[in-house]
Image 1 (spheres, helix red, strand yellow):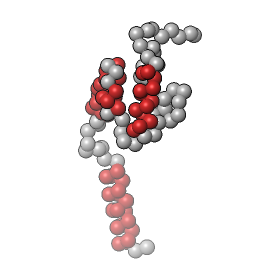
Image 2 (cartoon, rainbow, N blue to C red):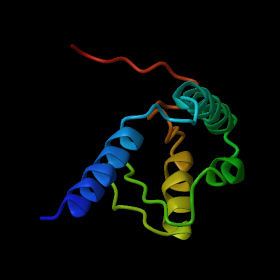
Image 3 (cartoon, one colour):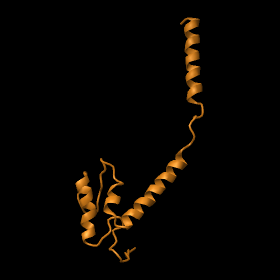
Image 4 (cartoon, rainbow, N blue to C red):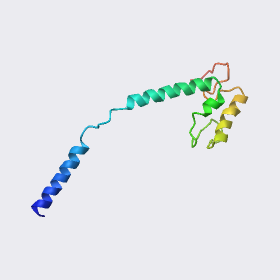
Length: 108
């Protein structure tokens, strides 16, 4: 290996190491992302608690998959809607599993 090749290899390695170990120029956005997710969660919970079916369904992405309790996996808009409509017919909130207007008692 010639001196020129060795020097070029050293400089390339040095440049790679110094740039990969440098601090990120972007700020840490985890706190902002967490705050955004918490706000969306509060909005979703409030919408579901109001029994706003259309508002609740608006939170789901086009490719969402819902795992409703004691039911088949909902993989499309129609089945996701049905997973929300079905329990409401029986007076049960799909968000909490609680009967409407009644407290839920759990056993330990």
